[in-house]
Length: 180
Image 1 (cartoon, rainbow, N blue to C red):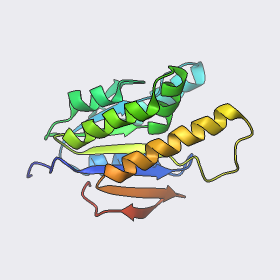
Image 2: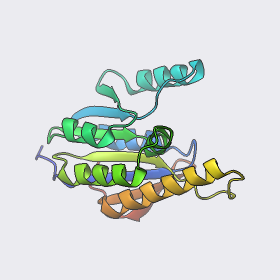
Image 3: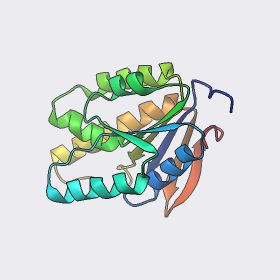
Image 4: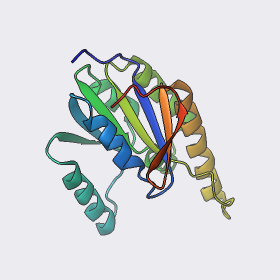
């Protein structure tokens, strides 16, 4: 197989339980490359720890998992390679982690964009589209929606392809199918 083009990037958006992670995983596994899963979630309670364990088991032994709640740009830089596909799941949890750590989301997103641009192999990013519902009733939730929306817009600008998942069905938003 020919080495992948360095700019092969895919953003997979959707709502909760829309099938976005399953779609992203299938696209990654369709490539004949090493598989690295970059998880932004932290197990802060027993329910989340169980969910993480189930997801890890579902991915199977082919995947190497790296847990990165904050340093996402650094993880992409460290693990991107021409023989590897990175799957980042998910930007929404990363946004939440940045907010609670009082990090500048705009600056961190710029660093991630730079890392994606320089990545030597394909990168698939998963994110929730949180702006389709009613306006949240509290300031923190509105701020989160705004931060997540700006991150999604910035990443969508630079990726080669973007798809939106609804009811498990992908809707092409941008680009050609370069990955999987």
